[in-house]
Length: 300
Image (cartoon, rainbow, N blue to C red):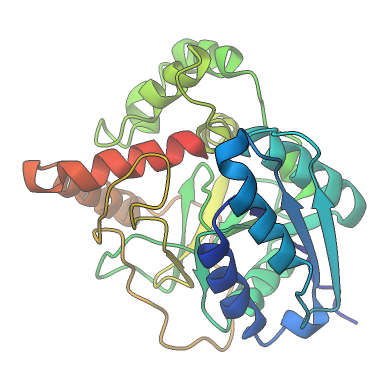
């Protein structure tokens, strides 16, 4: 009998977004067979208390899953520590995990795609993770691999999560030793290394950039779909870094039936298309959107 991966959802103070995330997740065909863990971070300050409590009142009513396990943080850990510790706790029990945040809307077959991929590549040591989102790019294959890891609706195994290095300074030293900055930055089209330097300096607390670079430096791959299984609804001025953008609205999967295994190598054409997309979105008319994207990743 197939054992499904548990779902981890990380929430804070956005009740509307949390509701949308849960309602879409409940429509997944495997939702009723899946265990759901919800990690609710504590209030950062008095201004956040009411919305945090509203989120907590809502998640206490959630049904539609095999089980619902709610972890209420007594203090504010911040998103990075909440995710790092929550993923580690759950993956140490179950060996695999599907991870969502409170601004991710899922396709009805998102859970099927993630579980199929987790099973298909579970023994392939150089596969770091599965990703549910892909940029709105035409011409991508049905699935493909790119080096590194990602953070908008993703899944991994205990063996891969074990390579996560929380110490940004160690990662930066290794980047310099390997002279890997240009490649990590997609041929200088997206400055992940600068984001890492800002994390080291305390200007952001991004777990996602550390996860991406940890996997990248181990030459590990992430599987992407050619069309997205998730939509990020966080670009609506609701976050700390207020801006609105639609440049990351995905081309959604029209259907999904079966996952076929592909060679375990980076798809160079897809990598070039990523670079072209990053360069395009860095043009002046897209600067507001790309800056918000970077700020969003800083929180991740």
